[in-house]
Length: 279
Length: 312
Image 1 (cartoon, chains in turn purple, cyan):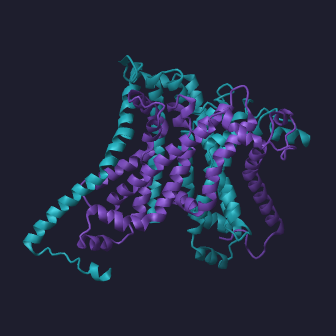
Image 2: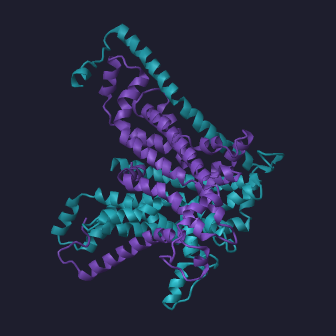
């Protein structure tokens, strides 16, 4: 695709292109740099009314103090348990269902698959009121199971795994059957090893999106101790007064896992994002 | 593998084999349903049952699901059309969704067109632009909340420094909605770019070569080849964007609390408040179902597009 790459490359077009790119990159990255800067400032620095990028005396102590100001360690632990638990559940159930829909023939398959797919169009805010009431009746408000169970599997994950399993040759499975493999053995020993990269993508996307989940914890969590990092962070953000420096410090702490995951796995991630859309 | 697969001849001609096939067929169906059991239970309990509960609650007054309630038929749905706050919220949500979806798509397309060329460092640039999409909306809301703060924010300080007036970005009735839209565009432009890049890479190079031989200018190439061939991608991005934006709660909750004067009172956020602050469960359920209907139609369109794309 070479729209502007004709023989007569207009110098000014090229200049404008680079200017636009530079501006966009700046806009995309600046808030994160500024966030790190804020996290190293004192409250006096921030309310002086003269914003700075590099604080005179960087307050690294903010990163030590935040753990005392709010149970931030607990928040991180809660998020790890919830996002981790949900991710593990997805890795157990999504490929299993994907396999059944991709490779087994049985009456009712298409109807069941359509029903699973139809859940894709149910927005979360339509489920949130009855789910809240279900959790209240089960006495699961403010518990890990309350935070985890509404997200145990996803139609998206099942669909993704199915797409990756369809191309696997059926001969492999037949060979397994002849060698005396059980049906589960065929899935476990023959199919699963073939889709490991797809499972990595699924795990990454699930973990990151659950780590970022905000609305459900807001509804179902009642005590400070059960908050995950997302709603925990809003503790510093009160209606009339915001402790910006600690908000930023907390934001950096939440941001680090996503950033590291992104840095080392972005090829997987981007492919997963594209596949979820175009396939 | 090839040797083994040759064993797989179908012995249909023998009666007893036929019988065995049927029994193995039944056995496999049992296995399939056994594997699917957790999935069937899960989706029934956490998707279909809640939807049924919500539908039931939407037909009732009082405290359905939590206490006493009476059947009122479609009253809750009728009430929606007289509720000025809801109608206003619907209008705000429409502006928000259409605005951010279109702007995101346009910027994403421009970025994809530029970054599909051989530009130095394009891989890193793509990553940087995509990155905000992966970050929690909480961080983004708080971050921009600070940057846009009228007193301590760096944007107003910058504007003063170059001799312009600062704005009450998030508390001015005219500025709040555009500001919130900008944040959403900022977060999602990288996603649109990535999808457009995938779309661009699917266009065969020969089309361009052929057109160039016929003397087409780059503007013509874009207008008559790139844009039409990207149409499915564009539809996909806009429909996905609309579906996502129509159900957004977090931007309103975190950045503006729906204010000032309901200027950013997004529909899903309004439903959230009607349900959990005002405890009008029946009415909130009806509201949720209305939006569900809109999203349902949009999703059907998207499935149709997705179906066409697989063929393409």
